[in-house]
Image (cartoon, rainbow, N blue to C red; front, side):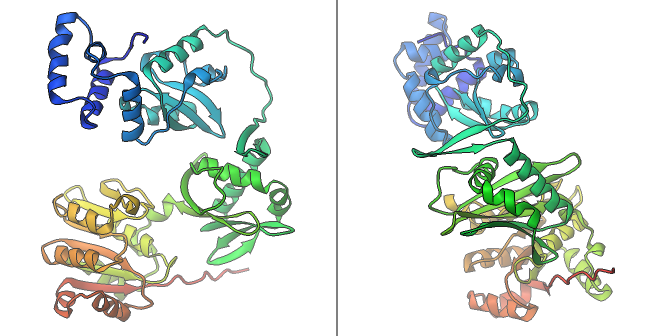
Length: 458
């Protein structure tokens, strides 16, 4: 094995990881600490000397604990463009390996989890999305040695970059500059037109793009010809920027991406659905500006606004916003939070997903796949000393029970329900098994809302 060349932080991170995964016991760690000073070697080198661990075990622990795929760097050919985007000294100092670039994604191999904190910095430096892999210390050292010895080579001055992505043994999809430009133009126009969703669909003899503008889907004919001719490449491009599996075409996939223009940053929620004629894509546009509206700008009647302000400035109670999907419930709740947000107030939100980021508010992403539900988030919130709690949606009895108890114990609770009108919310809560007396004691306001279509003057 080559010399580890790891700093103290990285070595300690690896040892902590090995202890957490029970690869090294407390007694062994004590032995390492004692022996290290005696033999004049670092703690990790001492662990190797004592045969308490090896590179394979470290690699396995890193890959398992942080869900990183393992990579064998000895088989990777060095792309000379890597040194053009990241200085070789930065690579050597931080002992991480950027080994492949494709579709705005930079693949990086690391040997320890302390490098996770550098990803935001790398994203800023390279203007690319980092994708992490686990590699052995020796592999990373040898790759860096090869990289530092490599003579600088001339790079083609062609502006069009083509990435070949293998989807199966028989097919290669080429994602070229035209496809990237098409995607950028598509998203930019949707944002400029104020669209809330982008629909990309393929049929037997044609393909089309539709924008949902002011609640109505409109076909954008100018994109149809190119889309029909390059549909698979466009799908591959969207999967790449959304960090989805480009080879998977059998099951639905959900992802997210961030689109940055000169003066705006837009979040995209991406849903891909396999159909008989290729995959169908819907992108929800989450404009951060939409979460920055004042309550007075939302179009409430004066009397209704006064009732709402009184409810949201009370020291405790529950305020529910109801309405169908896409009626602006989330926008209303963010405006409410903006109205009451002060430095002296602790506000926590549980959302699925977090749609708009707000300064001074603790926002939590619900992850049902790992069992982190609204119910679990609420239980944690009550130990975080909050004044205000926002629950993205009340879906079950457990969540409504905790939310009502919070509202009765000195907290101000906001949430949403999917009902058609305000009175139906009472019925929905009763159907969930909530006693009448709890509803009357905790709920201070229920508001139902709809979006009204704009009247355009010609």
